[in-house]
Length: 127
Image (cartoon, rainbow, N blue to C red; front, side, top):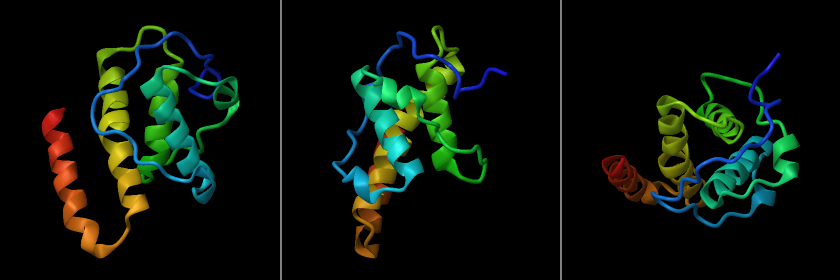
């Protein structure tokens, strides 16, 4: 059966616009969080390591946006000619969802909440 985990990496269009990822210590992240950080970095740079290709993106859970975004990004890396819908979803994950998620993860204080919300609104406006 073909799914995003078994696809080989192919030449893909990098997505580097939008907010950049904040610098986080990958060692402090869970396996799913670290995978999302690495796959977003790979899509932004256009360079995917073989190690990342063989790593599993985590079990699909519709209630868990993090794993859903990871699987969308993994599918994007393995699709030679992505549909416009897949590109749009991957673009959202790489340019909006991931950067905001990791920004909140790196600055989780309640006093940072309004800043995160404003950044999310600005990121949405740019899409």
